[in-house]
Image (tube, rainbow, N blue to C red; front, side, top):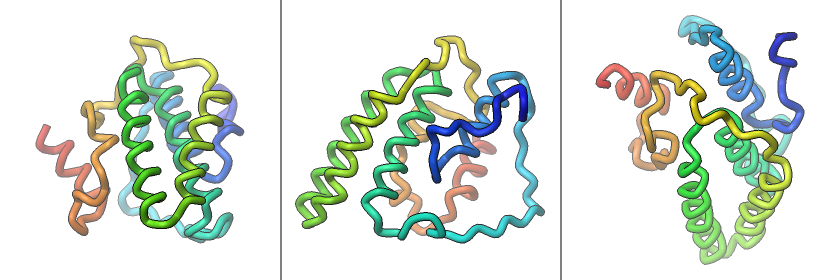
Length: 155
């Protein structure tokens, strides 16, 4: 915890634990899952589920996470295009506040991004190019972790 300087303050309310695990992995620590563990989480305890601010944090923090931990620069460009598409969908479905949140997130990311992951940064074995941008809608009701486990087992 001390060696990694704890949680990164930039990740307010979303993805701070993922960033911590990735930083630990990059420093050579083993990062594991304990399937028998139980975590109780008050979903939406910080921000309402349909909040534009919550959406903004999710987009921004995911960009910061990718930038700081993955050596693949093209994924940010791909994310930008996908995020523009998402903003257009929000706008045409009469949710302009959500569309604006996407663009605010990108502005904040550019201002906050800091140092990028080194080009030779290790990539977790479960990561496959493109997997992080697979829309969850394609999972057709399957649980995300079950999908990722099957994906990892098959590769």
